[in-house]
Image 1 (cartoon, rainbow, N blue to C red):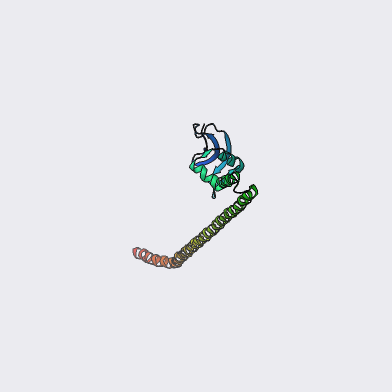
Image 2: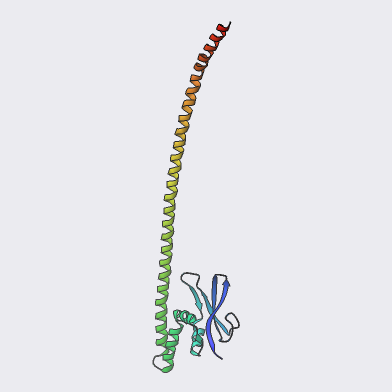
Length: 191
């Protein structure tokens, strides 16, 4: 029976989450498996990986063959490096304490790199968000100025329209008297 370490898909449509499982090579992708080693979520940045390193190393040492993607994930988590060190210990080239010390040094360096990358991403996102807010504030200020200019123009137009209307009301009685005068003259002439 050939045993493989591979990914089993779960999650929503277009939002996959994978389980890293040990399964018979003949079993379907999302079917029966022997053991679940961990999870992998590629939807986050950086991708979230949670693997039981000891169990995965034991399976790899016993002959389980990882798929290409699973091998990349296991290598990133240090399983393949740990297997390499353990083979050296089994052959007598290195002691178990030295192998553990090398792995711990590698792991702490990797964690610092991942943390640095995550911090950089967070800073970039914060700076990008701040820049977008500033740009939006500038656009809003420009819109407010345009609205204020339009209101000033509308008020000036209203004042100009009110002024002739006021002049017309003042001139209207004069016009009525001049119109009444010819009418009165016509009435006198008709008599």
